[in-house]
Length: 268
Image (cartoon, rainbow, N blue to C red; front, top):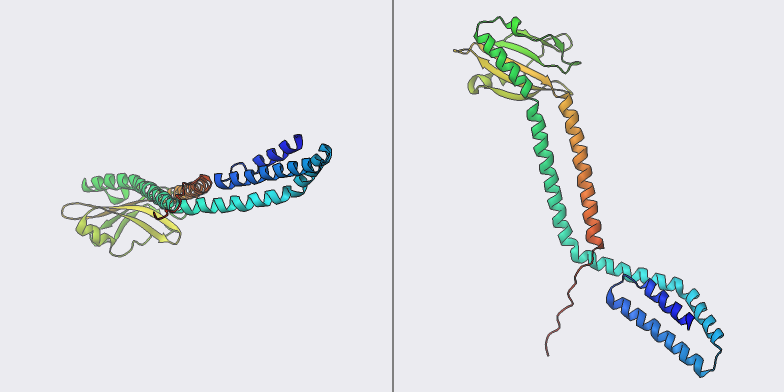
């Protein structure tokens, strides 16, 4: 009968994709119910049209219940899959986080190290010229205002840490270097620091002693504004990739079927 085949087709459709046990039990129940209704109709010598109408009526009235049953069974199956795979997802999330942190740290350190290259070249060249008895003012690049220009500048100090010449100005004044920086360079040699002469203004600075015996120090520095912008872009990019990787891994873990072993029953 066409109506019986339609009911069976509907049962196959709304049970598709469910766990095999629940799917097969439900289909067997529907098949048994169809067989019972047809047998009862034959016993009562019911007209086929009436039987078909009753089947279709039951199908229409029970469709919402069928879908609710599927949602309940499917939710339990998803929960079981998630519980089975949750430790693996947590381990994967830890690995993703560690990899993202290592990428951020490695590339961030590389960017910061790149900011020292221009000051290092300037400091080395200036120290060589000063050792060749050049005047401090003659080895300076063009003067800049550090608050508005990202260009590099050079400062020259004597052995007592007094400023002899400077191409860098901060709002019209020579910036003050933190105490102890030159003293450390006097005992250890070349030093590379991140200097913040005023809040929000960061400079990559290289300090190079010159002369034998120690005649003084050269400080060359350049604004970290460009590098800071690249570091912010890097941070956002890695954060977005990290979040996307966590989301994708979570969805894969939640949707892929898990092999759940049935509990072992003790032998009698």
